[in-house]
Length: 299
Image 1 (cartoon, rainbow, N blue to C red):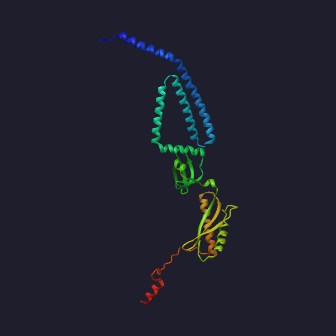
Image 2: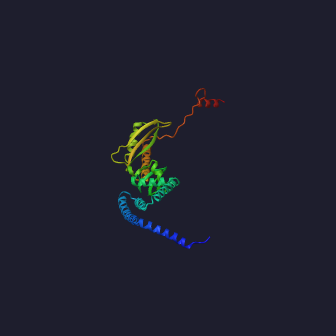
Image 3: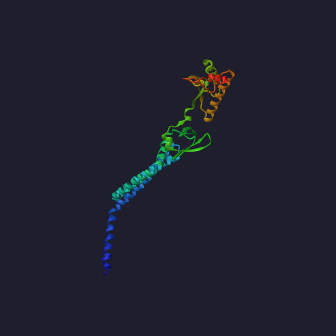
């Protein structure tokens, strides 16, 4: 087979001329597409700066404002690129890119759903601010001071000195007790006294004992209520309000209240009984303990 060089050159020349004609025809659209990309680039930078400035006013975490401003920048640039590709008659390419991005996003969402859930919870917590650094909270069976809140987890330091990392979705979805937000807190003490005691006298002595404590919140009355006949005592609850300083302060106030009640009861001869069990062997044909002792003595 003979190679026809002149024919090959003609074919190549025809292809180049065809490409040149297409490029010349597309040149105006190409220039416009480039201008569109440049325009959207400056718009994206402007929107990113404005968004970051606005977010910094409402969100304390710089990572949140940086993240959202970057997302706004990428979305704006993406819109500009799609418009530019449409100007170049590359609609099929745009469709393929969007479909691929959707599939990749769906796959990543399933693969990292826990991470995504923690991230979304962290973002919502940054805006809603249910807790802040320095708050004393109780959640997921842990109680301590919040030391850090990032996009993935909340770190608290327990009163035993342990650092606990709790995923944000657990903090966001489970009940959280924020002791710092309440400021005032009530102490409920469960106490029991002997059945032989004068209950009105017990009430007056117990209330008088805790009313002298320095931790009490002004304007809040100390209250005492009897609530049950126990196995070996009549039980009551004494309630007093304190201004909540911190968890050690709360425990100290509770401890001082217990000491004051015990000391007052000792000074006034009021008995806090031990649990008592009565054994009766004379029920339904059984033999009483006293009779058993007499029988043994006669033997």
